[in-house]
Amino acid sequence: QVRLVESGGGLVQDGGSLQLSCEGFGVINGFGTMAWYRQALGKSRELVAEITRDGGANYAHSVKGRFTISRDNAKDMVYLQMNGLKPDDTALYYCNAYPRWSQEDYWGQGTQVTVSS
Image (cartoon, rainbow, N blue to C red; front, side, top):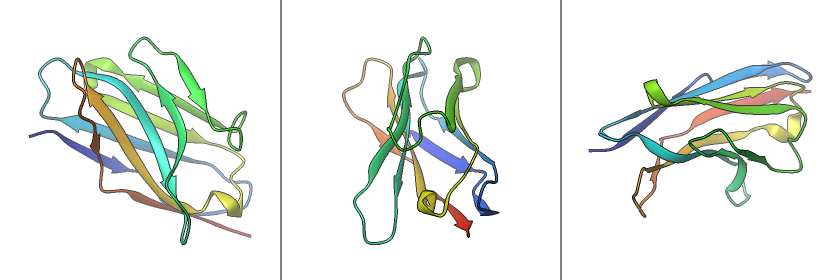
């Protein structure tokens, strides 16, 4: 059974930093594209950043230059380094991933990030 487990959320002050981690389990051949999404209270879930297996990354305009997505294919992990955090970044952050050669994606349970002003 494929599972994604996030960690690293928490409470941080305006301008602070956090690193989120997501570890994947249950795949034999690793993951293809991995991504971070977020959902703020009362808003739709939105893509924050995504990264292909070979390291190509895309970012939402709102986080470009502040957040960095990276991955370790050997460990089936993806990371999100978040710098210059703002109150608007407050949300539940979800890890998303496609097992290689699969059309079905999977979601983690989410980790809360709260930025105080």
